[in-house]
Image 1 (spheres, rainbow, N blue to C red):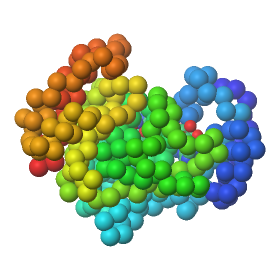
Image 2: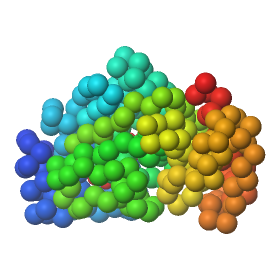
Image 3: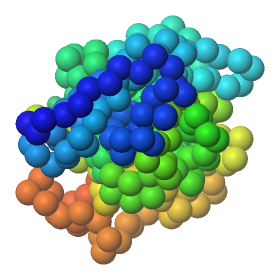
Image 4: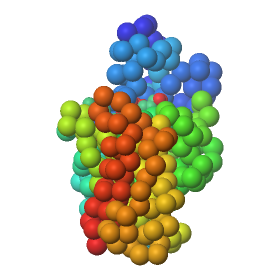
Length: 263
Ligand SMILES: Cc1cc2nc3c(=O)[nH]c(=O)nc-3n(C[C@H](O)[C@H](O)[C@H](O)COP(=O)(O)OP(=O)(O)OC[C@H]3O[C@@H](n4cnc5c(N)ncnc54)[C@H](O)[C@@H]3O)c2cc1C
């Protein structure tokens, strides 16, 4: 690893000021950032540890909105009775992330800020039409994910929480890489107040909505309607795990399974 300066923030304002001053990186669960530093893919110079900030933790439901603090771990989301009752698909998604160690350290805010092209939470945030809350503003899901590992966040901007409107129906199905559990392809289907929304992760350089499957499901919310959609492979990923054509096939198949799971 490179030599780094470590700062433990005592408040969100102090963390934001340290990020602005040093050009460093926020540290949450460290499950992506520390690995990237060890592999010398990242050299932030300074890491600003958010883990002592109690105001970034916790889960609450107010009316039809479920709000999850940025530092809430995947294990806490998976185990939360509130999440299981309000959006069971979200609890199940969290339970399927990585392994027990990753779920006990990794956080929802870290996953969203990282925006790995194969991460699970971005699909939930996009399909459920969630809002990302930061220390500066509110960002609609449709405006948050900008590219591979790229988001709308400024360098000194900190995710504080995510608010999910409770959907009428939702389910997430992924085809996991058997080693990491990252999604080779994952599809989150939701019937929301804003209509049917379908988000796909793992298939392309970054999470995206499938307008073709959304249109098919708006007409007929059935597995057959999803499965009948032919996804063009042109802009999808090819790597040692699968070809673009294979991923294109998986998108329709997993969307169909998600519709069935949503009931
Ligand atoms: C073996 C392994 C398997 C995994 N499998 C999966 C999987 O199946 N599915 C999946 O989705 N993910 C998987 N992950 C990734 C895991 O979910 C990470 O927890 C997550 O990507 C990052 O969360 P973190 O809290 O550890 O963030 P960190 O690693 O601490 O930070 C990641 C990035 O986010 C930034 N950041 C963190 N918190 C904030 C914040 N509040 N505001 C602004 N920026 C912030 C950091 O500066 C950094 O750039 C896996 C990881 C490992 C190591």
